[in-house]
Image 1 (cartoon, rainbow, N blue to C red):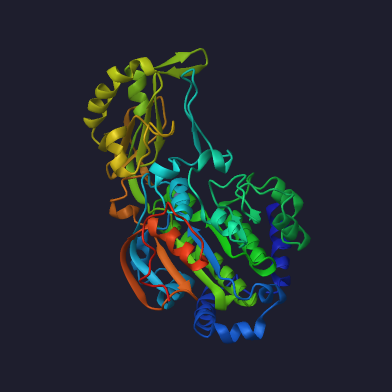
Image 2: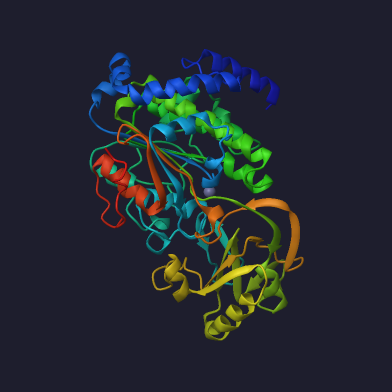
Length: 482
Ligand SMILES: [Zn+2]
């Protein structure tokens, strides 16, 4: 695909669209969105009467909740008075915001997105990585498989299942741990399917070409994917109006991994996420559903900067616990790195009793490692029990600040690296704290929450939608609900 010719196609399409987001002019965007939001959220009922469309009239009384996650957006960034995110600021000032939202352990994308829709931690939903950890019986390396059926991965009731049982409609765009899920009416996934209705809408509307969807992840930039995911969310809002829409924007994570949080590159990514957010807010207003819509703008975890890498598998090779077997490697023990956390699995059951105390003592003595927890000890951190799932590690390792784990088998055990970004660290680390902003019809304006747990998000959404999540035991955030 010739990028330049494609850009021209896209520009003309943007001009042809009914909404007039001023995509090219930052200052105009900032000036125009703030009054737009005030209009949307304060005098929304007046706006809705004037612009209600037939789809909105059909379900005129049922609530709409839109959850937007800005992957890895750190809570501390919102404290910067010069953060270039006018849409997020307007939503926060007109709704409720938390100083910080505590993620669950591990502070990793899929486990926390799953908590946001279930209200339970990894000890109950069993998602401890960005997919299912594949543990080959022959001692081959561990692999994380993302494309597994949701029912195989997530062992907890979700908001979209609860909503569907109540006769409400649900939608997801780039949400995770949701592949093949029942109860999702409209979707445009991380790996979109050309046969889905939303894909068909986007092609029919001239917004995407068929080949863009068929080769979605190939040679495309993170910013382009966020733009398309926003297109899909706008299509769902304007043409299908689901009661629950889950939208996951990812570029903030990609850029912060590469360039570290709160850097000039990260600020550009935050600003772009805000533009996507603005398009979603505007779509809600244009669809005439602002008077029954509540937004949750969240992140799954924060981010920190590190300049040292630890590769635990290098130590396992040195200790003879991983060895060459032809062209591949076989091990009695493997470690799966998740940035600031690492999960150690003893694959040879005959050696478990002998190796567990030795490895705990060894890794506890390494500089750059903050904590080494047996499975029994890690239960207090919300890590699942070995008795419940094979996803539960025998040892759970957390890195100290400025260190991150890697899966490497070769090279030095610890090495320096240029500044980069990571997450996965203990959920008590201040840098790991996540974003929480709620705004819209169900939210009292001007509420400032202190520090809250992300376990409280799903019960709050369940209350707004009037659906039941019996296993989500944390209290809803009644402090800000009207
Ligand atoms: Zn993430």
